[in-house]
Length: 354
Image 1 (cartoon, rainbow, N blue to C red):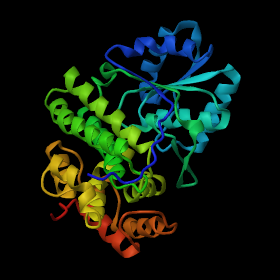
Image 2: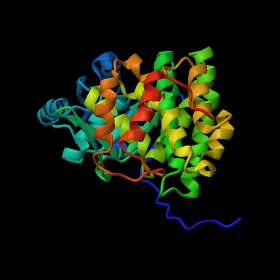
Image 3: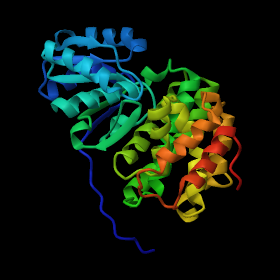
Image 4: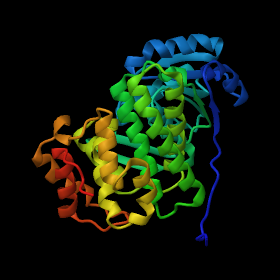
């Protein structure tokens, strides 16, 4: 076997994984040399954030529980006022992608170190990517300043994650890995991580649907999400993530559900151009990669149609125009017409044809 030339860069983050690992937050605040941690969360997780702040004692300088989906700039500005008034020298982000995004937005503006304690399978805690929304548009940057220094994965924190959210969050993670398989800057290490992450989620998600408080199933899913997030943070993303950012930023669709619905269709679209790169994913899920992922999502009770998120067919016309306004790299060439057809299939919720 010949190995194609590649470049691999190891990413400088510390990962702490294991049941009960949340008890080590105070230890890691000390180890990064911080003294005054601002704990971040969404309004829905404020009680958990305050419990975490209580657990780290005098190291906590307060709680900001205003994190919101798609990281609105206005919310970041509010959080920045709290950062300054509290004299915080690090942030501890407890939650999913919304809270992690807020921590990253603060780090971009202040270079404060971040400790992330994920409670979903979003995977953004493993990346140098920040998406912010302002004026109805979502913009995305990559900057090492926003990559968290420490990520503490405690599967027990996901035991209460509702099944529907667990499923869509897990499919969101699988999307990171799927695009990593055909990324132009992929390498043997990221490809191995992508397939192992997909495998772990392929095994863990059905088990947690059947038994939501099964700690082993939750551990498998969280492990898979970490691997898939690491892939997202290591290589370039393409059509799938672009479309999700368009729909989320311009139409305020829910992040994980949008990823879950689009995933089979974007993979199917690119599978036509690079079937050999997606063949391992097809083997994991059965049939073609796109069709297999649609079947897998349906078996988990995941949403399958964009129309169920409140989008109209007129919205699809606008989304296709926005998505093709700025060219970007993708394995298969596309235009507004082909993107509009992809979105129509996702809007209807039809199965991609093998």
